[in-house]
Length: 324
Ligand SMILES: [Zn+2]
Image (tube, rainbow, N blue to C red; front, side, top):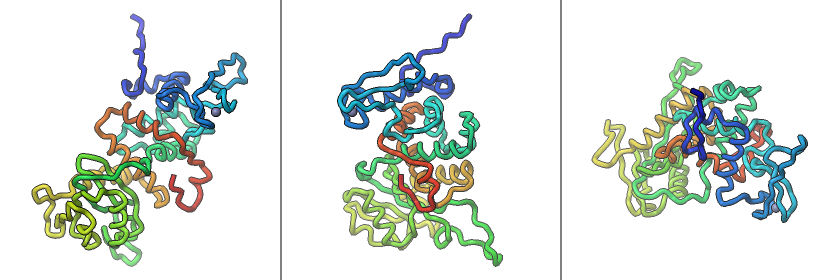
């Protein structure tokens, strides 16, 4: 009997094997439907007066559209993280799907092999562009309710120092601290921070959390006095005394988040420079925030975030941190 492949309309119905079988036209159709779910809109002037250019000649690019108002031409990649990319759309969709379905992330090297990309650098640029699509909208609402706050340090196991002294673990090391602010049963805000002083920690909490919330932290003195800022007060779980949970007072969700981040960072990526750590935090936060939906739906969510973002290779390669 002849095998007839199933017909899918949206990513949310697909498993990895189906995504792997997409043709270039199908991938384009999927991307267009996600980006322009309310109808195609000109990325230059926002007009919805659009015609599709179905030229037979080889000089007409596939998927070319034209705005009847500003008369400019565009495709689904214009004005997104995919703009001017030489990677095919089916590879883009597969890359989005891989990064959204692997809990600990996928390394650029793995993705290069899976997608058959010609160079490591283009795979690396691709994964960073997908991370920037995953970045939370800065206007997203504040976290509320019960909020767990914690910090950790990424970057491998502590090594022996030059003088035979083991590096200190945790607070006081030269490693970059990462902070997680977790809304219990909800979203996470996580990012690398300069230091773990009271000023840095409190500023980050106030930026991310609504005033009515209740804050839970460990006994680190940097959090002292935070109760003055929040109606729900400040509750402390004393890790130093071996206490991990007292009734509902724990930072277990924040620790689960860090466990995932660390397994990803130490196991999958091996080395993450401080410069790019923000984007890895965005990636892990994105998967955490969208943990309750299936892989295809999570992929659709990430694809929606591609709009209005560009992350050019020359910017990625610069020494200073680019927050895209
Ligand atoms: Zn236009």
